[in-house]
Image 1 (cartoon, rainbow, N blue to C red):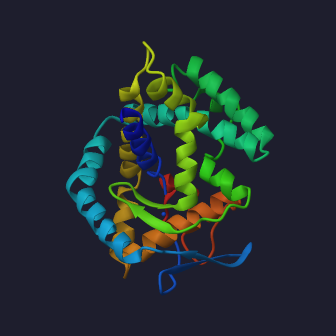
Image 2 (image 1 turned 180 degrees about the horizontal axis):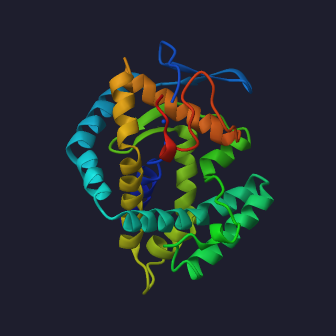
Length: 266
């Protein structure tokens, strides 16, 4: 039972990263770009999804947004160090996905970054690797790998608390708990004398708060400018995933963003 609970929690927290685009009608979203002549993604449970989305918005206003505002009041070095540690931990998922996608050079760079920042960077607090010319690469996950292999998105849906995802991305998240995430294996699966599952869940919560804090103004702008916020968020998420899977630097017809952390709502 404890194992099942852990799997559910990990799948939920794995969805904390994403959003963008032009919403079509009747529960369908058309993703458009220069590299794509139009791809339809089904919102199979739109009425339910909208209810969950409204619930999530309420939680955000009451809990997550105030928490993120408080986090932003911390000294910049503390926030930067936290972001660096979380980014460094993310490499343990990015590296195997680099390999599975045939991105051997990126896998090598990310492996070196992990070693250098975990040692010289004091557990990743300092990004020493960038100083030595090992520039940060894009994050990869198992959902992106499945997409690269040609697996379709499946239905789009919204998770309570944690927001948008698709069937493919949720299955990708499950890979983390069956051996695909070394950090999960060390903390939750094995619960060693040095790390335990509390460390894992704390890192996931911090990742969500850090992400939300970086995007306070962007989300406010999106909310104020959207006629239908649910459709905007749905489209933004799907377009962002489409771009990342195909390694497209910029989306067209929509927002331009390199990551959720650099969301541009202009």
